[in-house]
Length: 577
Image (cartoon, rainbow, N blue to C red):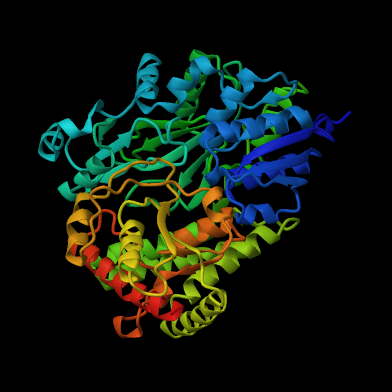
């Protein structure tokens, strides 16, 4: 029997939402003959349009506590008896480790053993393990970021500083991804410090070079498959790259991966992130992603099908061996690349002027010509599974189109007409929603409540909530101070987490502030009745796509934000009256 046909009719349950790792794993296992079901973290993810998915479980991740989510998933795994269960990000990985330990099932979980989680997912312990294996890392140390200063650290490590939370996700806050920041000035340092108050963080000196990823499949510490890629475009502020190319594997980097895997006796997939200096030929290990990673589509396109090979290893069908691949291919994340180009153009224009910004933008645009060859792919596109890409393209086109003033004006008028139709019957409840419920929505809710006193609308129940699942956070001090100008007291406000019990109350109107709120509502509560406060901003104040989050914005923007809310609340009350 052909080895690669031994997965046929096996059942897999995949967790994720993106068009990179998640969609690639789905397509890979479906192509190998497996029946693929999914649990998606967003009900509006374009990945769900894939014809490779057999069944989607519509779990409302946003509305559930971690324990509720674990219970639902546990029951699915027990009832369906999947052959293999695969998480594509930490939001599923950490809860699945607990589920694996607490249920009776024959399902095999694509998870690291609990005893080696720390060196794989904690950046400080990754450094320590690397040093034990004589693997080069940047100069750095762990410290409480609140107990130091920009001056102290820049003197010790030079500029720019590389500031890292010890983990991308913590088990306590799986809804919040923590990001690395590259700080070449005090303002960026203070932003990171504010986001990580009283937290242990990793500070490293900057290593000059470009990013190189070495992806591996290891079986009990023995690397059986490997692939290397480099970033074609390197985001100035750090983070993943939207455009990547295959490169030959540097033997010393592969040897470092082998030593690390052997030290842990690791079985699984991992992507080792390195920084390589082409002048000195030196490199350092940055971190490890011990689950399927964002650049996975490029590896599969180059001929290293990690998901199918990993499934064979876990199901003990055969042990793969793949250390060669097509080294001339490229892959890009279409939407991320467009936004990255836009951001890069803005930054270059500010720093180096329009001429250099336009020259770089032209170079990036010309790179799309590679799509006309057989050497480049788009992460979300597959000839046999095209719908995810076209839905992604439509979402991007719609977002850009709606920002044009003439379209925004027409859209605003249509939304107000729709809004008036929704208010044929006066709502019993109004919920003002933003992401954190500590800056905009509490102010909007209390302002609305204040303005409807002694009016026919006074019986409407008013409340405010946020999508952020950590409750009882205080309003920001600057918001408390600013709100006093409108006679609003936010000192006693404590944040509340929006869940389904709030949304499904009959005759409830939800009022949102920005596009992220709208996306989250459509993803998790598609049946609710909502409007955007930005659509009610008077035309005399300009066109607004959204009333943006003032978090970490200058004080002047907070004042402007509250002025927009004030004016649009007046329009809301007028329309309802």
